[in-house]
Image 1 (cartoon, rainbow, N blue to C red):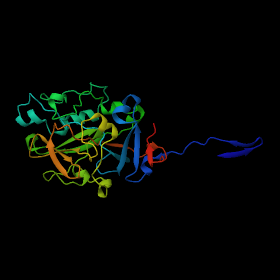
Image 2: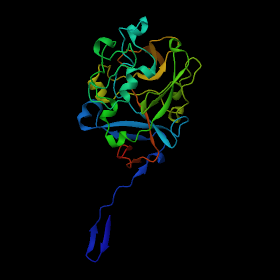
Image 3: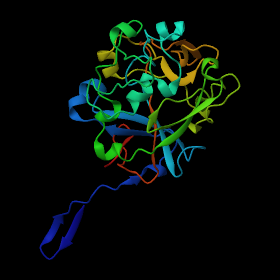
Length: 289
């Protein structure tokens, strides 16, 4: 802008206005910067879409974000060669609280250090334990690639997850900073009569079809130019080894837990008071430290 004083006209820098995350509409795009060493894996930014505000059962005064694209492909849980259950031995476990993917999403550990056994028979997602391609053991923990000041703003969320019949046929309640969506939260139905949460406002009108990021296509073995298949946290309740996912047509199906050509669309909650930038030329806001 220009101001006038005794010395005549002068240019004065005016700071760009900031917005509160909670002031944006459902469906708005919001991106989170990625640390420079991990741009080749995840791009310069992780792009999310606002899925809801003050969602039932989630933290008060929060905004729920879901990744706009599938950010990577990996198994839900690796095969467990020492597990006495023959299905989990070959295909991995569908119990979300014990899954490799839940641990990876919430880890701040460097590359190759995020995995820790979650139960006596657990096994890492190395090549010999995943079906087809895309082992994820070598990756940095998902939160390790975030800027620390922004990762620190993530809210702990209590999520409800269906148990399969093998695990008791009830529900688990887990605490997480980042998690997978459930079937019920996407409006894709209850699992065996049990609702894992309630419908996110975005999916009252938004399509379930999404694509992989360019980085995911570069780093993972995947079919190109096809919509992504992506994991839910919902198990197939009548088996110990199968998990629900959304296929490339937006239909809910199930597959074995160690099938590693399936995408990840993380969900998280940030305070509604989180500062974001005005939209850029593509209409995307950036979360500010």
